[in-house]
Length: 467
Ligand SMILES: O=C(O)CCC(=O)C(=O)O
Ligand SMILES: [Fe+2]
Figure (cartoon, rainbow, N blue to C red):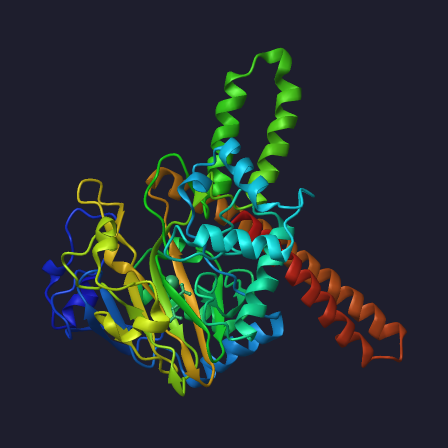
């Protein structure tokens, strides 16, 4: 940090004192901070907004790095992003009776399964009550959100989009495809290098950055967009952070075990194990929330026309989430109001923008409330393709849990590395043996590679479950 402030045109008072969590304190729009990257090169970080602090770094990535990340995403395969569902209060309450009632209303033919028509009709009914309605496959938000329903809605959404139905305004909050790239397990020099660069940029502890969720690569085609949203969730004691969920469950486990009568111990332990597995692998918005302190967004391509990132209420001092209704227009709707907001960032290959979704709590010096003005999204791509990557930085607002999670992550990493090393050794020995005993030399490297790819995928899935 000292080094950082020595070489820039801001003074060291920028930084909040007594804070355990670094956050740049911007001094003015257009003000430049100079930050050195992992190779000691100087990067120019321009302040785009004060509230929340938003910064832009041109040439954060080289063209080769951008292309490489896109290639990796294509190799891994992209999937429809799905969309974020703004819930009816009754659904988010998790009240089983109310949810059951809504489900029964939707399930017109009473076969306990929602077909596309039932979904469509049902969603349209619900949509009348809320400004936008969509569903995020990654952060599944509905209790009644079964795999069947998810599939039905996605088919329905796709059809609607394909038919250019203008009455269709609700379920297209997010229209894009995405892939997750694990920067920790993936033996990829460029991904690792980008991680190091993000550490230098954000000045956040290495352990926090590396134990955050995987890099999310997103592709938008013409018409693709992501209406305004928040990347993180409000602090809430009753919901655990999804990234550090494994630790919270471990905690519960320990507490439960201590409470148990000795005679029941074995039985109960078994139950706890089942419960834990179930919870860790299924992100459940009734019990967990996203805790994303900061977002570093990479633009991996130029866009011929459109595709800006909009922050409709950045630096709007008077904006508060509660006052949303009073806004003169629908700030969420970036298809129609991309340019009506306060900050619009044009995509440019290699550029990165970086902002804080949370403030630092002045008393604790740790993660504080969500910046209401961090509302943002991606405007319609009009021509060409838009590629971005989200490098989210996850922090638990309980410092204790975050520290515990990082320890857990490191242990897992060590185990993973050990297993990887063992497997590699075994592979090499196997290859050596084969080479000695076979004439078909050219075949074996191929076999080795495809095996590795498969196992890599498994490992990645395992990690994602935990996150
Ligand atoms: O596409 C953009 O410019 C913004 C994307 C975004 O906000 C997100 O993926 O969370
Ligand atoms: Fe976002």
